[in-house]
Image 1 (cartoon, helix red, strand yellow):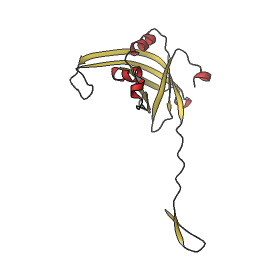
Image 2 (cartoon, rainbow, N blue to C red):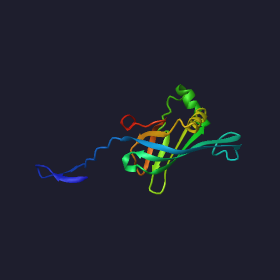
Image 3 (cartoon, rainbow, N blue to C red):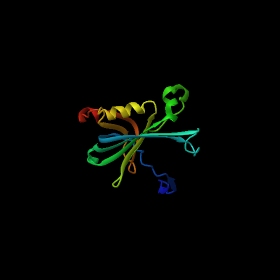
Image 4 (tube, rainbow, N blue to C red):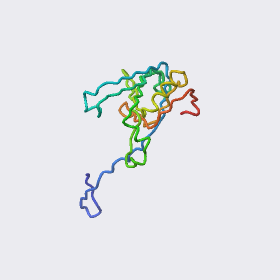
Length: 171
């Protein structure tokens, strides 16, 4: 608090005004995919802290690509991992049962000088279809939409798999 004087000479305390909170900014991040591969693992679950149940299942689509938008990061190599996850199927199949559940992201993008990566999950039942489209050459771009970078990270709110990219329409 700062002190100021009034007409009568008495000192009064006044509060400092806080700067107005900035509105959250959003942007697209476009990745051109150069290589994609899949991996799958099924095992007995020895660590119940990681996954409940007797078995553990891990499915990944791993891609290497190049950021082409925003232009500031154009040419940056990025590793993308999309995981098929059975734990989230209920949220998609029975949305009314989770009316009070409000997720903040579908993926997390990290852009750093030494390592740039993206990790997300999709419901397990669509994971095989996405992998098949990549292997058939039907998907060449990730269009990620999320918050502007803050401390080199962005919460991604939506992701689109695309065959083509048009900067006038897709950004």
